[in-house]
Image (cartoon, rainbow, N blue to C red; front, side):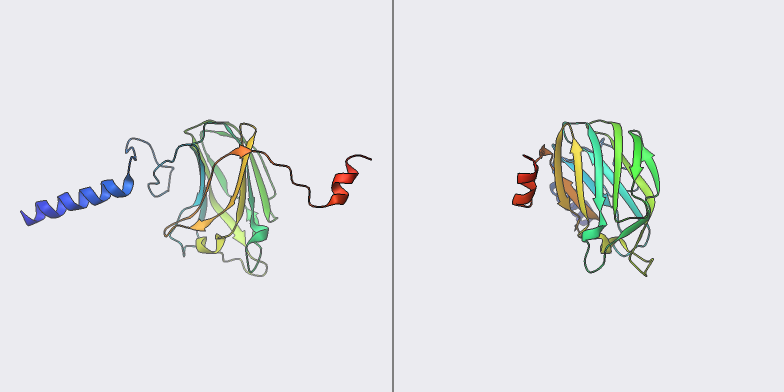
Length: 188
C-alpha cells in the first residue's frame, strides 16, 4: 500500500510539473524533455551545466517559419565567446547558410523550419580568448536574435538549472537609430 501511494504521489507531482505537456510530442535529440510553449522559439544549450560538450538545440513553436538565428557571444562577460566551430547541423529543416565561424557572432539561415520543427548543431567549439575550455554554464548571457515570418525577437541565454536557455516570442521588427547624426544622414 505504501509503495502504491508513493507512486501515485510521484505521478501527481510529475503531471503538475509538466502541465499540458504532450508526451507524444518528440523532444529534440539530446535534450531534456522541455514542454513546448506555443508562440515561441526556444534555443538551448543542453546540460549538464559544467560539461564542456556544447550542443545547440532550436525548437520552433511559433506560428511562423523560422528564417534566421543569430548567436552573439561578444556580449558574454567577463570575456567574449568566439565560435571556432559551430559543429554539425542536424534536423529536418534545411540549413541554407552558416556565417561567422571563427568570430563571436554566428548567423544561421534556414528554409522549411516550419512551426513544430526542430534542429540543432552538435559539438560546437566555443572558446574564450586564450582559453579553449568553455562549459555550458559559461554561455549564460550570450545574446540571440531570431527572425521568423517577417518578425524578430531578441534575448539572452539564462540558466534554467539544467540547460542554458533562451525563449523568444517573435514580434514586429524595430529599427533603432542610436544617434541624431544617423537620422539626419538619412535625409541628405
